[in-house]
Amino acid sequence: MDSPPSPHLLVLPYPLQGHITPLMQLSKLLASRGFSITFVTTDFILKQMLKARQALPADDLHRLGITLTGISDGLHDLHERNCMLQPLDFVASVLFMQTSFDELVGRMVQEQGRHISCIISDSFLLGSQDVADKWHIPRIAYWPNSLAALACCISLPRIMAESSNLDPFKPQVYEEESQELVTCIPGIPEIQACMLPFHTLGGENSELWMRHHIESQIQRVNKPLCFIVNSFPELERDIYTHFEDLLPSKPILPLGPLLPSTFLGGHDDPGTGSSLCDEDEECMQWLDKQTPKSVLYISLGSISTMDEKDLLEFASGLLASNQPFLWVFRPASCESPPDMEMPIGKVIKWAPQLRVLSHEAIGGFLTHCGWNSTLESLSLGVPMLAWPHMLDQLTNCWFLVEKLKVGLRLELDESKKVGRIGVENGIRKLMQEEEAQSMRDRASKFQHLAQSYFKDTLASSLDSLLKMIVSCEAKN
Ligand code: UDP
Image 1 (cartoon, protein in one colour):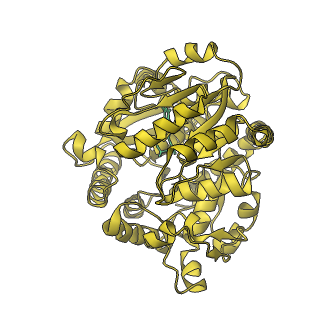
Image 2 (spheres, rainbow, N blue to C red):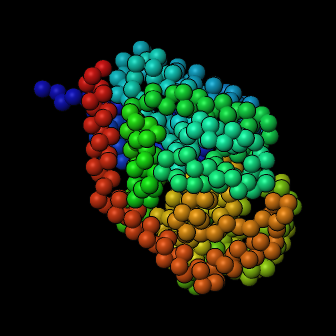
Image 3 (cartoon, rainbow, N blue to C red):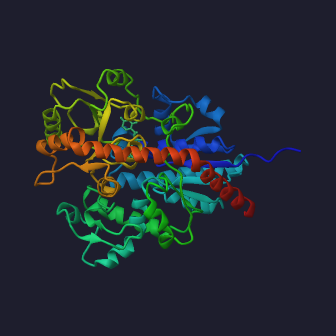
């Protein structure tokens, strides 16, 4: 008798690096448990993934059980994609992706007769829920940020009710460094309003869009089978244990940190194979020549930008600190690169970030607090200097500075801009002063917790996910 076919999943990340990497890692974990995975991304991203030097060849992925498939995002050129965070382009591409995803699912189901057991798609792609509903396929939502950020978002109605004068989308809340405390989020006894994950930086249109997006998330929060979160319970224990107060009927499945096992004390892993850029290999040899714990790694993620003035202030403070550094400066992040001699540092376009963070020469990470970077740094025991810009980066900064005490916040000047003195002082505190060692000790505690989760608990969390999908399939 033929054995039943393996469950087939469609995995759909939002088309940005920080969403693609963890979902590719999750796909690999699920493929290793016998699932067959179709990893769906935009044609543009697919091309970048296949072109990047360190990419895993599509044949290797196929052997693991993962097939890559492209859909259109409706954008025509690179310029439009670089503006993806502008609300109109963002909304347009998200809507277009919904249509192309619907067509793909339709083709698979109707023309090819392929069974789809479940869709795992990014929470940012709300329209994928409509596609799942239309084709009667269960959907699991992947939440790409922390549990804390999810708790804040779902608590928005409570936050608005708690203090009727507070509109957490308005820039004033952030510009004035509001000391107003929000105390109604289950699992977060108190957080300053200015650290809530709602500030977009992009003006009124972005604010409107963000408000609409969060409200739509809340309206549909009970639709997916469950939420997978790239976090682990020990890291966000208080919030995790209080989640039932927020979402009584919805399982929350922390499955992180979604990193290749080699970085969590596991066996060899071919890497995520999902970098969209060529990683600089030479920087690893440069790091080999540096003293242990002496180098500051600097990266502001895959989408942050800086104006020329900020860049000059930042670079001047960095040089004044006299600290060796490895700085990822993406050419697209500023109109003109810093025109300065960098005698004790190295500037590169894109780093093998996990390998860099696990190198013994690294003593600290100056980060924009994207959730992946934060989680990677914690999982590899590296303390952080936090320079958050917007959205959940603010909440992540609060989490690592005030809650975990594994980092400090970069002090801005009176006009809330980056200034050379704040940069120089922040780097000294992180890398050279007494406090540095205690932050490093606390960070290594989280490294051990991440490794324990990976070794002792991840397998049973994956089993729960598997059971949930299979039992839902049986009911359908
Ligand atoms: N990253 C990398 N090399 C770099 C800079 C970033 O591989 O030079 C990776 C990093 O490891 C992380 C992702 O890009 O996995 C960035 O995601 P994050 O959530 O930190 O920030 P975002 O780019 O979404 O703002």
